[in-house]
Amino acid sequence: MPSHAEAVKSAAEPFGRTIAVALASVMTRIRSLAVAFRHRRDAAVLASFDDRMLADIGLTRRDVREAFSEPPWRDPTALLVNRIDRRRGRHVIPAPSLVPEIARLRVLMRRY
Image: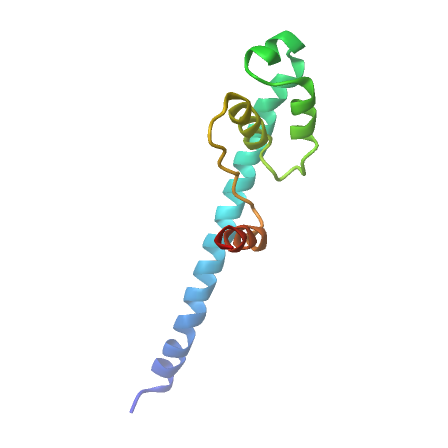
């Protein structure tokens, strides 16, 4: 017959795993946000470029404004890369969403 301590320990194991998975998910989101903010800061340099310099890399002033009009947690460089690739005729891969419901919806929409 198992002791009371063993029963409590076996009942707490799934809870501990759930907490670990939830914590890993939160840490992944925090890292994604940190990367998005770093890219936003790095891409802010583009705002100081003149129109000729932007044209040299395949962007317009409007592209830069639209990239920075996205919500703060979205990576503006993903939109800029997609714009450049589209103009050069490359296959465009959409940037992943930070919101899992939207990502799941995109997968479902591709199937149909």
